Image 1: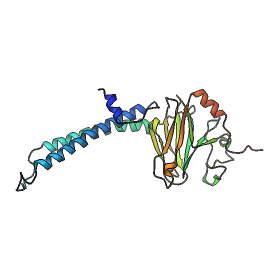
Image 2: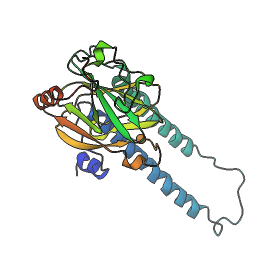
Image 3: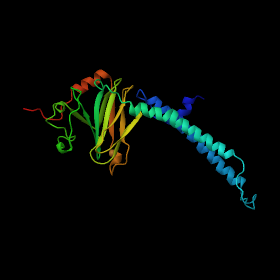
Image 4: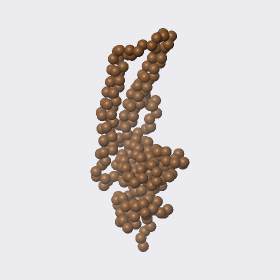
Length: 255
Ligand SMILES: [Cu+2]
């Protein structure tokens, strides 16, 4: 029986991004440590119930425990948790969250704009520069509020409830919301971020597999939260380029 087989028992989803395996490993280690802790403490509770039952101990002893065994166990657990946190979780967090690629000129840039109850994915368009958006510019035809006067905005396009990305390229997604807090969970990418009104939270990753998956809203955001389902489509680079070039700009062409 291999470790991989044991990990399959956890039912963790497949990895379709470059960094995904690291997060998956981390999740698996944490699950197994917690399983050992949970089972261990469970056994201890039943042992204590049996060992200190009233029939065998008719008279309570008020002096308490005299051995240091439990202290050693507690210290051991703390050491394991500190190693997990400082040795694994913090460096992984720093790599995934802090070290956002500085040179984004070649990255695929998308804004994920949440609202009750859909996702509008805003692409930078052929110029690969995100157009300016403003709350005041939002209309039914311009749901993300692109500013018409901004030259970078003229070629920007949107994709509603479908996040299309290429395999093998760095993707930077700015996550935001128009109303309440939502959560963008890209499960096969092993990445997730809350969509908070007034904030743009960047996430980045490199997809390594083509395919189609559901995107779920990861925050209970209202009555139709469960129906806030979108698609994540990862295509081969050339198919993506074709799709990208075929999209119509959101703003009407200026006469
Ligand atoms: Cu939501």
